[in-house]
Image (tube, rainbow, N blue to C red; front, side, top):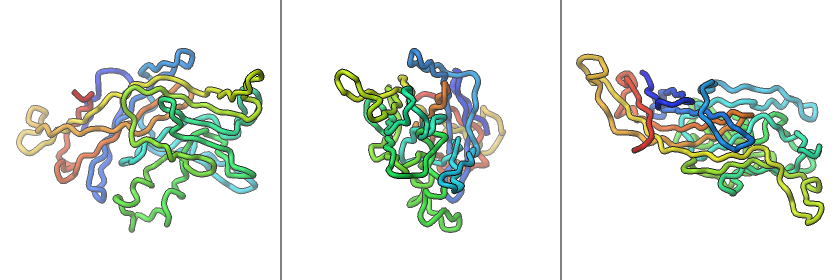
Length: 280
């Protein structure tokens, strides 16, 4: 099976087949170069591509081994909530004033869609990422068991990557990312981030840029017998893709769309090609 991607830089894609779920997952990624001075994004030619395995960072907190996810895999089959990820600055980092920040926010169009407030007196910090990944072992209760796992009731929790404990709050989340978005990640340190004349709180901006999220579709082509060549493959109805994961790491920004092809309509052995393009 092959993907036909848009004729522009930055794109990668893959598919995953899961019989228990009953679908083929389509995962499409685009990567951008962030010009932090201008707040603009340019599609990248040097790609990291889809991340297929978690990278774990061994850490010790209060003399206990508390490994955290440095970089999570991009391979969720589906999502119910948009994940907003900021990598490379941990919760113990100092702000520009040399002070450990107290709060942080990941804003979309001015609204804090993810926030962090330092718990007191103690918590398990994430020394790696400011807005990182929820531990997989804690996403389900009871823990994930492939023998009893149910996609309908547990899938949304298992595939929700963004951390949401230890001071993190995602109650004001988004189901998906769409349209023209203004993105801003900021931190605040009580006392150090106030205007000396007015007393107003000043946020230290970690990242700020504008992002245009196009509506994307996937058009599958299926072999239904006869000559096995592109001219004889059968076009199926377009499938809408949902943009659900925005990741910022230094000057690299990535956006991921996902969609599903029902195995009842598109048998995996017969899927030959998927054309990824902007919706008409």
